[in-house]
Image (cartoon, rainbow, N blue to C red; front, side, top):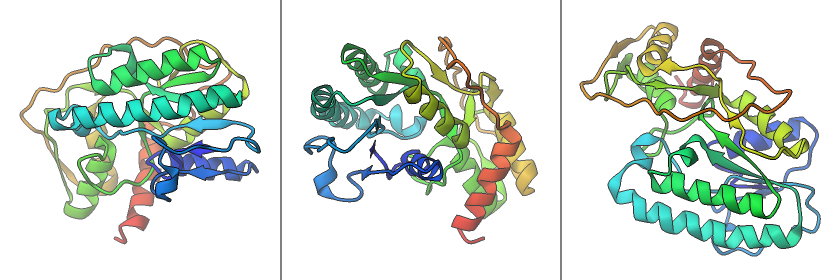
Length: 263
């Protein structure tokens, strides 16, 4: 079962699992009001393992938005309070997808993810800290992520207008590598703190420049000074390592966007 199966990453995970020959049970509010993870009672009887993805989430422009904080707090606490006791009672193996921001605890998103980690540990589940994922298609919105925003601009206007100067750095990882890491983490029942990332720092403007090169676009840096998170890397899943380079991953992502927005 994938709780949050229709989201930004969930839909890609479901396809990945099906390609591995696994039977996937989708569960998501986008499918039905009966699948609202804040209130739904779930029957885990015929489930072998659970991927817990459901969350109020988006790119940085949403996560740090002042008027979204209370909604994030209410929504994500509701999910935890409903799902965690049911997982504990079911005793099914599960993976809670956390975030690099759980280390800092200076955002509602980070605090609630950290709480999810602690709860997961208390009931003997597995959790991983996810860094910046790209690859799945996203419609441009206040929740979309930076790579998707850049690609959408490049394909539709041939110009990438940045908010910041782009000198801030991030670690980006392609969706295929993410799915492999999650599958291995739950299969190996790892315990501890593990990061799912490329383990390579890239400036945001470098990412914009690669996208511009691949789409014959131009980059217009912004004026704001962005910040680089000083999040420590705690561990890499034994036997797993990212395989897709940034340029190869961006090529694949651009191809997917081209198909999806019919250009």
